[in-house]
Image (cartoon, rainbow, N blue to C red):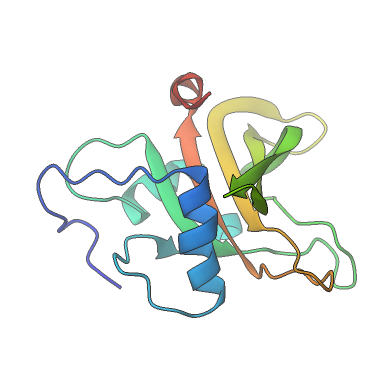
Length: 162
């Protein structure tokens, strides 16, 4: 993987939802080469959101969003629920998932989550927002995604994304 701090001056990485799902995530899951390999693999649930800044930094400029791949962690070995807890808190889903289309075909979904410090149900809402992307299931109904790609933003930036 590339050294993320050595991207060209003026480099901006700001892909669309469609590009994140239909190019980056699809290639990652298929173990295909990604032309510009700037998205780091991390274990999201072993890292607090405020520690992502240094781990997923691109270039030397100030950033307010970080891109990364992470495996989904199941809450129970035989269950379908995702474990979204860290040592300091948990990620809580908000609202409905957003469908992502490419040429009128459904290619994936985006889930929005907010980080809460502490433990449910008494956690304290923070300014950390995450968008979790997943591929849609294929024709025979099996899930293609063993990874998901996410973006963490400060709440101030959340208004910019809507």
